[in-house]
Length: 306
Length: 250
Ligand SMILES: Nc1ncnc2c1ncn2[C@@H]1O[C@H](COP(=O)(O)OP(=O)(O)OP(=O)(O)O)[C@@H](O)[C@H]1O
Ligand SMILES: [Mg+2]
Picture (tube, rainbow over the protein chains, first blue to last red):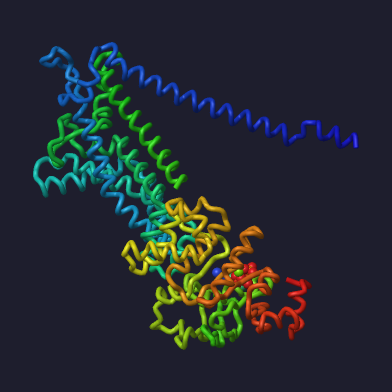
């Protein structure tokens, strides 16, 4: 009796191991949190300096249409209008997502509902491969295929929003597809059975039950794709033309937040206005990333409630 | 009168034969119970009455299942129409993640009823038949998944009734429920007899003897005995049947 009591009171090897594990994982988390907070602080402090130190007004920055931070405008202030890039980023993202969504959901339906064996054996590996291709490759293909095609079809240089949107569409398609597949797969089989047992056809079942109950997950997939498109720099920069001009059509050179950032970050001096406004662009990207993140969480919560 | 007649039915899952030469009548406006130990083929047989087995890959069937003289395994048989005529209630309550109203309206809408007033009426009628109208009538917009298990199962019964089936198959409909919900559903099932032909799979001997008119006892994919429920439970002809209902195996 006493023996067993002692044993219970004693720290066993297992519980010690548990403690060590807990400590290690706590340290890892603490480290990650520290890094994230540092990045946030760094970008924010630099990005805000444009407005606090250099005296640019936030309104001018967000709504100004002329981007030339090196020179002074008529009102005596530097030309730091970021609207062309903000608009460019949103337009390419929305276009890419708008085209990718039906394709991705269609492919996902095929892979889960119509032909799971082909889906599993052929499409799944292909998509996984596509997800893993580095973005510079997509950009390169865009540069050598899409841009010339646009040039021949619409004239001009071929660089522009449409080329960027196409490259982004191809790039996010596999991600959105594979997330959609996971979502459709997680729709319980018994929903499908219940629908079929009522005499519904396969399409009715897919449309009215499977897609409907998968909607939150599919939205999350699309938002995820948008986040990726919004943040993509290299591939976009290679095909959009990088002219910091208000986009007036889809086939002339334009720019996005990321493309201007990557183009210019090596050419400015730390602490100057030219450098600080780039950080302000980065801050917008960060805020958008946060926004996409919150959006997916919100969708998830809404989905769980329904 | 026989509503459904099963003749020389053999069913294979791949190479494994799950049903051996089944011959069985399902009588109209009666409750037929399938009993037998786990894995003996009760679910398999009940699912071959509305061709849900078609969904199982590698499942092959020979023989005949006739519903009112029409072979449901004939090539020209319309499966969607068949499943409308032969409703099914599953072991786990499985309402759709939608409102109560949309759950019940799903079937009628699927079969082309668009008129809101007709759908409204069907929803109310079906919920009443499933003895759940009083509990949910003020809350038809509520998500069906927020109901209790017993209520969900009655929603599923109402959902099945809404397409106006002739036969209702129930595979262990109360095995996931508490005794009170079970009693409610048993009462409800007995009440459905006058309008429908019912088949119920159950592991609960009392349940089978309480509610069914005929009982078929299964063992290893064969029907060992089929008779009036009263006879099966008081005076079985086969030793295996007696052993099973007296709880000696299974
Ligand atoms: N989809 C399937 N593929 C292969 N074998 C199956 C499949 N479904 C059932 N079986 C097999 O067929 C036999 C009969 O199964 P069935 O589900 O009809 O039994 P049951 O009588 O309903 O049992 P329980 O009382 O446990 O529900 C079992 O041996 C089972 O392993
Ligand atoms: Mg079963």
